[in-house]
Length: 245
Image (cartoon, rainbow, N blue to C red; front, side, top):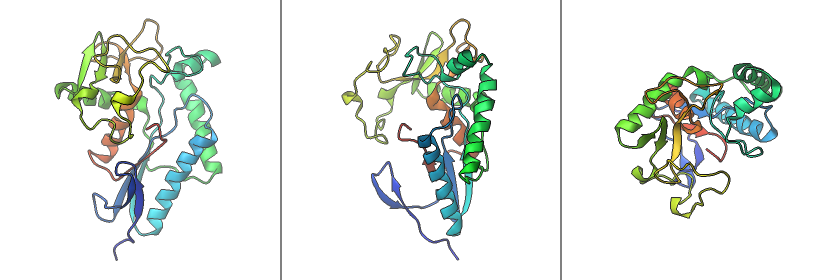
């Protein structure tokens, strides 16, 4: 027997749509996991609880579910409180006097312990961002080759103007957003809306890797794209996460 039909709210269409898996009877799900620089808070855990409930429901209805949830242990997310532009992983490492990967492992263990207390089942695959730098570099190079990204002094930006559908998923219009509201706009961008896929490393930076554009580190936006494609291919069925995604 075929699994029971499922209808889910689709962020792209802004309506409840029938789930039509890429492979009949098999649903692939990717959840953007924790950025492991602090303990998870109730909002984070609500996101992961939802992913677990969705997975259990699909399995109950007869679907085979392959569930991937990543660990973000590097990224150039700015800290809104200190407004220094520093990677939150690096800030936590400096505050606690530990190496960034020590910080990542400690808070990963704490996060998974919290999930276990809520009876959230472990994902089938939990990739770490730092283990997939190569895949991120390949994806960035593909975007550069297609004219969707450009490099300036070792930093690679996504060119929003080259992708007409940009903003369709979030519902935001680029022309209506106000640049520089939270942090200063980088002066080397072609457009304030462009965002970094790869950031050139500053002297003394703790987390950095070699790349075709010089030493640097990945932007937050490219990480889940690379990891989801590595484990789910170019197309998968459901992506869940916070509204900021």
